[in-house]
Image (cartoon, rainbow, N blue to C red):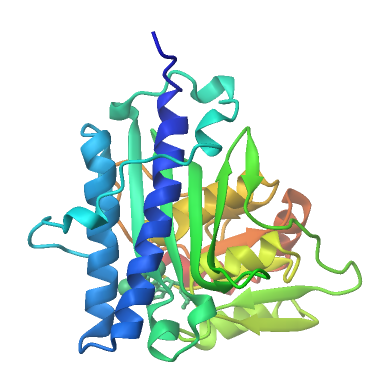
Length: 299
Ligand SMILES: Nc1ncnc2c1ncn2[C@@H]1O[C@H](COP(=O)(O)O)[C@@H](O)[C@H]1OP(=O)(O)O
Ligand SMILES: [Mg+2]
Ligand SMILES: [Mg+2]
Ligand SMILES: [Mg+2]
């Protein structure tokens, strides 16, 4: 009998290929230059991901950002092949018996919408987050408009807690600086006050939760700070898992992990705080003025 890989590895490896396919759809829509380009791009991308994953894993709860009236998709959008390398990697013992009923998949078919409409295409990512019970465990961050050195478009970053991450070159940010990345399009006075309190040497304003976490993974920033409530579970589940598989940490502004269980509310009401390691994360929480926490708690 052929060996069947652990469920979580098959889910990771199919998510990897569906995120890539969704990225190709987003590029096609952009090239087509149709009206309602955003609706079309994110709905089509979500259809591709949800239909492909639910066909192979019917009992997994999948929660996507976009509300779809129907789930019909073109046959060519159905992804059936798993990534052959990823599926073969050693599954951490902890996840070897995870069942479909224990999983929740959070899908953001197009993160960085505002940047997509402004032509800042590098900021756009496709996010798939795999939660086991209530915690973010696996993630895919696909960047459809990333230009590879060989001219190929797109790259797919993955991470699984206990195993590690891949698809990018891991790097640490400079020791003599403190670079904070934050929102480009949703800023307000509270967000600005929270950043000022940290006295960063540089602030990098870019779009999307996926792209900001890529900044941490690639050593372009030390921390991601968002003292506001606009982010949702599908924005952070995948990025949190990838970052934490690499030794980083992503929580709310108070340092608590969000729950990704199927029944939780979608909003990340208490903001987002991510850092490249635990020490830096704790240090930021210590520096954050109490009035920021108080304002966040009222959100
Ligand atoms: N106020 C908001 N309203 C809607 N979406 C938000 C808001 N704030 C953040 N988001 C979502 O979180 C992502 C990260 O936020 P930001 O880019 O501002 O740092 C955004 O790209 C957006 O996801 P999406 O583009 O998928 O709708
Ligand atoms: Mg998003
Ligand atoms: Mg989105
Ligand atoms: Mg949106």
